[in-house]
Length: 329
Image (cartoon, rainbow, N blue to C red; front, side):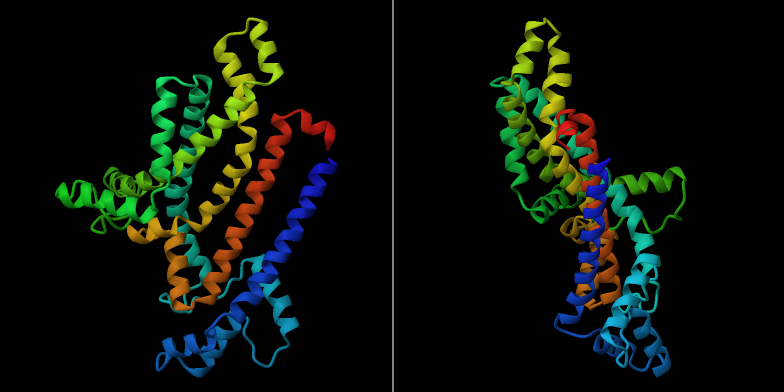
């Protein structure tokens, strides 16, 4: 219980620090939300509407910065994230985020989980059968693919499967715009078809790291005394590989996986940009280009909270999987 309380306190302290930085950093960046908003609304809205939009962002020239900070904390924690001053001028930030979040979770989230599961499984088997055919081929191959830039792999897949193949797979957006969104077979099939290339890009460039780290952890764990004891007891190799060696070898990877899951919220910016996939990574890039500070602040907040929650869950999972940590804490 003390460990949980301590980790929860660390979570709240880190969240407050991140919120504070999120408030001050945009205000120290080159450019100004006032000038950006005035340029985009010139002749389109009245001065009163302009001032209202600035107030929704939290920029009040005659208000003390401390009061602005307190208002900002209240708005961030209650979900009042203001209005966009970018391409979606005047649209609530919560609406923009709500529209993009499912696409990022569906594409980047599922791909990240699959890369971790497949990479971990291959790493376990490769480490267990060290020096075998699987260990000699797959880890080096996927380590090389993981070193390739995201955008280069994405462009190569587009060239092969979209250009050279005569449009075998679509190269942009998230579905065929001629279809009506819904749960019809045609629309679902179009969504899956548009997700193939970006998902393949993420899988190819991320699975190698999980394979290599899991293989190395597995080799180290196999030298432990409790694994030798399990073999001396005559337990089946499959049980030793999974319950004794694999269960302990996966522990160092849990924090890395938690970080990856947390950063799912940010989306794979380069991948979503290359494929014009309207997820959170794509709109974050657009927000930076447009100096859309309300949208940037909301996305940075979501990324921070997602990473912190994922790391907290990882710590609790480690506490559950590794009995040795319970006595120390």
